Length: 255
Image 1 (tube, rainbow, N blue to C red):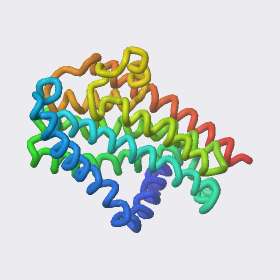
Image 2: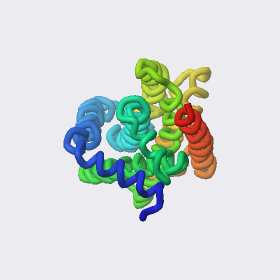
Image 3: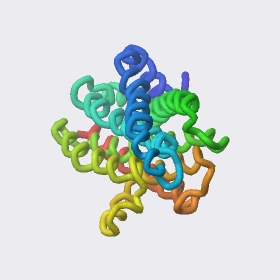
Image 4: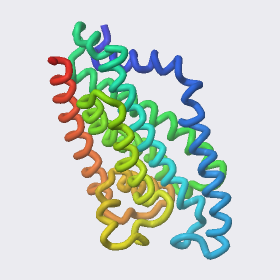
């Protein structure tokens, strides 16, 4: 018998196999269309005025969209699917009747999200490379960065999803968390163009740290902050989120 954590991962992958084509557009096609429309279309106007930070706009925005794709995919997979397994399909309650423990449920779920993020990132990098948006061999580390970013975001969101009983709370999460983070985390323009009072909001977002690492890797330049600091911040989100998620799962399943 496989390890319980791996068994949870296998269960998620089996379920995903039935939904692959339904999710292919948002996971693979939409980010590419976004890069083509914004990076190439809007980038034409930006480049005509000297580019952005001395580079063409497509090269600037591609790593941002890459990290943003990982961010949004992690949030999506740790909201409705988690709530659904507690309230609608009772999947976690069924697992509880087996040797699968709470840590296995959370750990297997996070591994599944990392797998989804890695596959989407590799497909995106292939297309970005064909359009000449990648400029360094350090690009090979971007899937690892996106995997870490996805787990760092998914862990606390999973904890949140395990504590609620109504999906209306997700509207608040997307409206006041996901959308502002995507807009102000340096995906579309440098954070240093924001007012001084707003910049700490961007720095607090794990997405900004993922964007900085991905952009530095694809351009072959040093990030704004030390790499170790960016990685440590994302790891802190992952560890705290994992602890919160296991506690929330345990309380939910004991009620």
